[in-house]
Amino acid sequence: MEAYADTGLVRFEYKNFAFLGPESTAAAEASECAAEQGMFWAYHDTIFLNHEGENVGTYSDPALKNYATALGLDQDQFDDCLDSREYRTNVHRNIDAMIKLILEHERGNGQLEIEEKEHE
Image 1 (tube, rainbow, N blue to C red):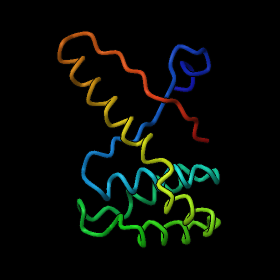
Image 2: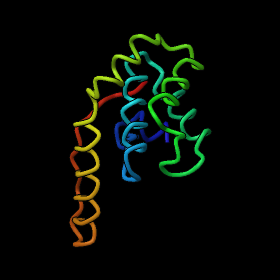
Image 3: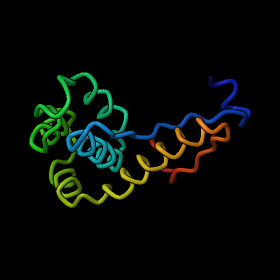
């Protein structure tokens, strides 16, 4: 992958596809809040390591805030970000774009444009 990415021929992007319900959306939003502190991938991994099912409380706001605490994030900053739902529109935009991609792909002409945000 790196050999291709270094040439610019390939670019790896991760997009939250939060389609499993309210907790899925909240987890996607929380990962963006963690990204503000340079901890997207650590938070992403924590979310997946703690998966116990869909909409069973694993990704409730208190649980998501506890994951941030465990990772040593600035708790006030994280909580303010999550409580504000500042990334909700972007998360829903990515869901809509993914649905569009799937539909376009089924028609044989799938190209996708999603708002880009780099995660370190």
